[in-house]
Each structure stands twice: as structure tokens, then as C-alpha cells.
Image (cartoon, rainbow, N blue to C red):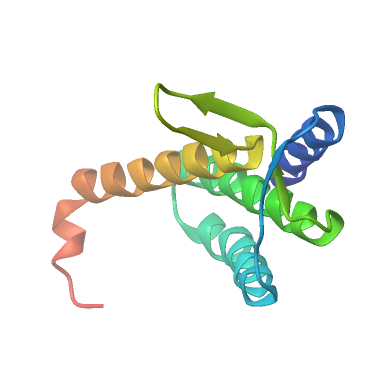
Length: 125
């Protein structure tokens, strides 16, 4: 449910905000993004950390937002957020932000879990 909320926020923002920049993605990329979304939704909830699950849901929402955009926009995924420096810039969208923040939260939770349960890491699998 959280993933759908973040994907919806991203799509609504892309629809409401004109984008001069787009990034193209191949069909193979779309397949990989779809597999990532499924993996995050299916496997991470088995991990014993609510923070990890929330991070995965946010990341899945970002990935889902970009997947929907990839399928919906013929020019590629719109990047309505542009930050320009003195000589160059970067263009991105909310889905990219959600994926980055969600991944950071997920990985931080996994590392923290590993630190808290160090002794269990030494047990044979």
C-alpha cells in the first residue's frame, strides 16, 4: 500500500509539472524494474525490521513510479526537477528521490540489524 501511495504521488507530480528533460529506458530495463518491485514487496517483509519494510516500500514506490512513467510516456521517463550549476546540471523526478531515500532507509535498517545481532551473523546458514 505504501508503494502505491508513493508511486501515485510521483505520477501525479509528473502529470502536473511540465518536463523539458526525459530519460529513455529499454524494455529490458522495464523488466528489471518490475522484478525489483516484486522482489522488494515479496522478500523484504520477511526481514524482522519495520524500518526496513518501510524503506523497501518507499523504494518500490519510486521504482513503480518510474516503471509506469516508462510505459506511459513515449519520450521516456519525465524529469521535471532540474538543478543547474555553473557549468552543468542534473534532471530527475520524485520517483528517483523515493527510490534513493527508500534504499538508504532499507540498507541502514539492515546494517543496524546486523550490528545489533552480530552473534547471529557468525552462525552457519
